[in-house]
Length: 151
Length: 151
DNA sequence: TCGATAATATCAGTGGCCTGATATAATATA
DNA sequence: TATATTATATCAGGCCACTGATATTATCGA
Image (cartoon, rainbow over all chains, first blue to last red; front, side, top):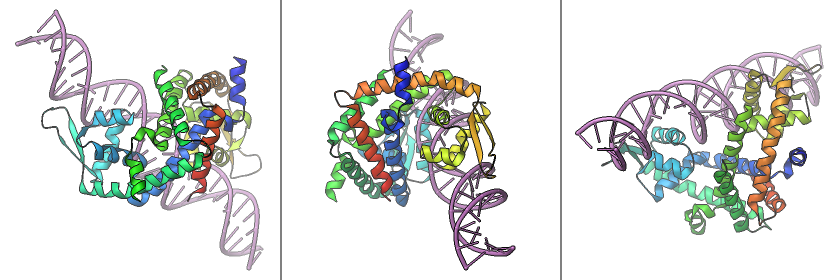
């Protein structure tokens, strides 16, 4: 108990959770800044990139793939639709599903965004040196897995 | 150029930026869920913990320490004040500053929250094994630094 | 077949992050 | 001293994340 408290009271910069938040926030801010030039936010890019790989997904399926709630994905899709970057239409068979597909404008924005995101990824990989990017990546995925299986 | 695109098109799970987002989001969701029992969100805990170490900080100073904008910190403080967890008052000398201090209720919530956060930190450290937590932590801080110095 | 269950979409409200803009107090400088 | 600059606080609006609640469609089982 008291050892747990001691852990918290230490230099916050040596806390894994704090460092994780700092790194993610910095990357997100960097990406948002760069992506602004093509009129996208980071979550919007993420959804568009997903739709490029598998067109016609439902809101629920997109939410599952992004690990967010359907309500959250709903809001993102509404914004993308307002910006004419995606098109939503009734599913040909299943009456409760509305599918989403990229528009030409969406595809165009995505092309420019891919460059930006790839550059940020390279910056990130360079930054972890001398650690191996694969090692860091695996450790991060284990954190995500551990948190998900908890509670 | 084409090699950059290839990097993006790969399995997203092997992208450092994606893994970073997944890990941080999972930790944040876990913490928010646990902290709900004491009526706090993760950012709220973070601010209260900061005030415990240095009472009477200004909104601007709190924002700088949390790496968020003054407007964001303003909103967090407004919520905390509404919940009677902090008290804001005019600075004794500097007329444009409003200082913030913990209330008794704030201190009480913080005590319970410290346990929860320390437990999550331990879970995280366990999850990165067999990697060394210090190695991962340092790599994350280098990412944050690299993104900040960019642009 | 009918009723229960599950899946999907969506509305409403909250919190935390941002940008942009404005008002005021403190400080530096001409 | 008077003006310009800087620091602080705060309002307004937007996006993304959540919970809670509701309506509709599919599906499963008695």
